[in-house]
Amino acid sequence: MSLPRTNSGLVHDLLVELDRTSSVPLHRQIGSALRTGIRAGRLRVGTAVPPSRRLAAELGVSRGVVVEAYEQLVAEGYLVSGSGSYTRVAAGPGPASPPAVRAPAPGLRVDFGCGRADVAGFPRAAWLRSLKRVLTQAPHDRLNDIDEYGQPELRAALADYLNRARGMSADPSQVVITSGYGQAVALVLSVLAHRGARCVAVEDPSVKDDIRQLARRHGLAVTGLPVADDGVRVDALERADADLVVLTPSHQWPLGGVLPAESRAAAVGWARRRGALILEDDYDAEYRYDRAPIGAMQGLAPDVVAHAGSLSKTLAPGLRLGWLVLPPHLTDEVALARKLADRGSPVIDQLAFADFLQRGEFDRQLRRMRPVYRRRRDALLAELERHLPGFEPVGIAAGLHLVVWLPDDLPEQAVVTAAANHGVQVVGVAPYRLTEGRPGLVLGYAHLTETQIADGVRALASAVGELATSRNRS
Image (cartoon, rainbow, N blue to C red; front, top):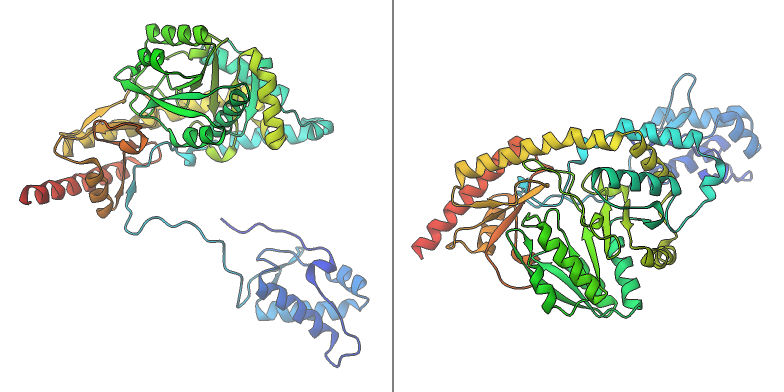
């Protein structure tokens, strides 16, 4: 990516100070000041310097003095000048070092990290069209409009989409826009803690660390609920002294189970009897391959279910846009907590996503990416069957990852370490557990090409083979 072209149209940006009593010619003083700025990295590659006539007028020198300074810097390679265009910084012998970029681990060939979408598939052209429409058509006063609930256009568009696509019962007045799922959880926990909540129940295994840290900050205990093949064991809720339960009912993370209707109804009954809240994490329900669509739990009981979603898996996490659909009695308090946290998400991004939704671009993007991810899932399953037939895949019907249970004679951490030694990054199930359980690996595939998947599984198989041999010898 080329560096952005920026202008430095004011003399004080260049830090040019002339000493008219000096014996050094004025054009050399100007050149020296610019040369110093370029070497120090203040004037970056692509930065336009002021037109010679303007700089001469502001410095109180003849235009020829500035032209001579510019020509010398062009000759030295510091500036570049084209016919009919600005004179710009080209390069220097000592430019500032570029920002450090996190490098992959040494020898890393394939990273099966979970929870990642393929951001290379981000619909840049369609998103740009939405941005352009917003920038050209939105009234000026919308840029002054900071609404702690979120922009009305986006709240209405989201409610319409969620009701249509996820079978929900969402009114725009119940929607609060967030900067992602993490903030959504933080807001709910803070409001419930203020109301006197004492304990949060989470699935075991689940992505527990964020919730555990947030709960600790608010003085809340965390308890685990065991997960079976079809999702969380709801009967454990009756024994949990919890005021909030966080569930992934449409695709349990990470094991992939779907919470059946009777279990959903039982969880709702528990919440109503206890006066508790269910927080539904709908993290990747749009990506399903071998099953019919599963409606969101919020549609069953909007009075006790708060629904959280974001664009992290469907578009890109860098957009930092998410949402909560809340029971009416919580909406105002959560919106106030959002206001106190950061005053709200960027207006232009919210309006752009509203336009993106209303014009059907979001639906088109999901339809475009769903077969891409399915092919990658199929490639992973085929490679596992070919090279690691002893690994048992589960949670394959939807989502962006799957779990493989390991043979009983292979310790989870030993496999993770052996894989890393062969250039393959994998993560075990154990880090996501509150209690001990069956060893397994969580394999993300959405961000990998089919060739990378094949290479990664072969390398993983090689690592497992060497590990098994060494264990047999010992």
